[in-house]
Length: 503
Image 1: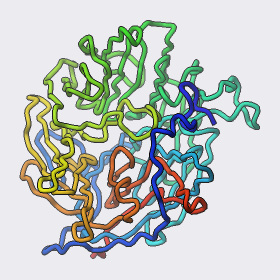
Image 2 (image 1 turned 90 degrees about the vertical axis):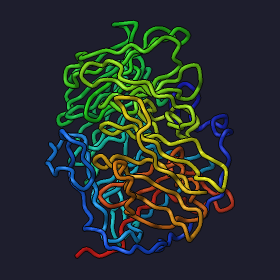
Image 3 (image 1 turned 120 degrees about the vertical axis):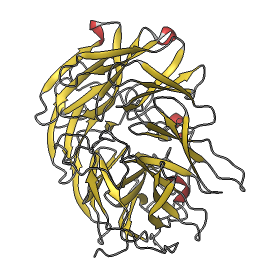
Image 4 (image 1 turned 60 degrees about the vertical axis):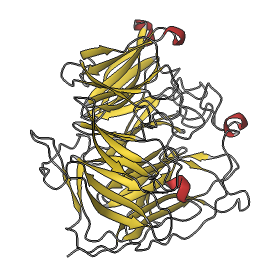
C-alpha cells in the first residue's frame, strides 16, 4: 500500500535508516519496586477548568465538561503506587516490513490503538489481553490527533479503498491519497460518521494533519483544509489552494483552533499563525512570523505557543502569544533543551507532526520542556524546566536522576505528570505528579518493564506515553518482527494500574 509521494514508508529506502531491533515475546511482570511510608488518597479523576487563581491537582474544581469539549482530566494519587498489569497486547507482523501504529488513546475502560488500516480497543482490567472491539478502516491511517472528547471520541484521516477493490469510493483512484475522515467512539469502537474530504487529491500521509476542538474536527493538507461538525459530520467550511497563494499548512486544537498558514514557495516561505472561529473559519487574529524561519510547530493552541526553527534544523525558540490579541508576549531560547517537535521515529514526517512536540507540555501559564540528555553517569540524565509564558523566564525545574530520564506527559490541573524511566530492578520506572509551586513529587505508579522493550517504550520519540484515569500506557509506534523468531507477535502496548485495593 502506497502512501503517495514521497516514496512509501514501506520501501526499502525508507527502512534503511532504521536498525533492526531484536524483539522477543516476553510475559510482563510488574513488581513493587519501592516502599512508601504513607497511604495516598483514593484514585480517580476530575474534570478541570482553569479559574482565576493558580490551582493544582488537589484543589482543582470538579466541573462537568460538555460531551464535545476536549477532555481535560485531573488525576488523584492512587491508593498505592505499586503497579500491576492491566493491559498487554501483542501484534502479528507478517513480513519484514514494519507495521505502523501512530495513535493511542485511553478512556477509563478501554485503551485503543490505530494500527495500519484498523483501530482496535483493548479492555483495561485483570483480563489484560482481551480485545474489546476492532474497527476495520477503508485504508491505512494517514493522520491522527491526540485529542479525545469528554465523552470519549476522536477522529482519524484514512486512505480510501484500494483502486479497483470492492466498495471503491468515487474519485478515489489516486494511489496514496488520504481523503477520508472517520469519527470513532473509543468506548465502543463504533464508526460514528465518515466523510470524503473535498478537493483532497494532494493530501498524503506526509502533509496531512487533523485537530479537534470543541464541536469541530479540522483537517489540513497544505493545499486545502476542511472542518466538520463533530456530532453530525456536516461540513462547516473548507478552503483550497486555488483561492489564495497562502494556505493552511496544519491545525492545532484543544481549547481553541490555531492554523499555521504558509505563503509562497518553499524557497521563499513565509509563515503566519491565525486563531480561527472553529465553526466558521473566520480569522480572529493573525500573527506574522519573522522571515527566515525554516519551520514552525504549534505545541499549544490555548495558550498559543509557537516552536520555531530559526537558522537551524531543530527548534531554536518558543514564541508565546496573547490568546486574546495574538501579540507576542515572550521569546524563549531553546538552547540546551529538546522539544522533540516533529521528531517521532518514523522514516518521514508521517501522520501529522505540526502539533506534536513530545519533549514539552504547555499548561495555563507554564511551558514544561525537557533538557538535552546528559551522558554523564554521575549527573541527572536530564531535567524538565518550567518557563513562565508571560515573562519568558525560567520558573521551576524538575531534576531527573542519574541514568533515569524524565519526560513530561501532560498537565494535571497546574501540576505536571512526568514519566521517569528505570535504570535497574531497584530503581523502577515511575509515573509521578510534580507540583512546581511547592516542588513536591507524588508517586502515582512504580513498575518494571520488559528488559527487551524498555528502551523503546521509554523513548518519547518511539512510543506513545499516556496517563489517563489512573492508568499508564506505553505503546510502540513502529512494530517490527524479530527475524530470529519471525512468527512471534511483537509487543504493541502495555498498561499499568495500581495494585492497591480501593476502600
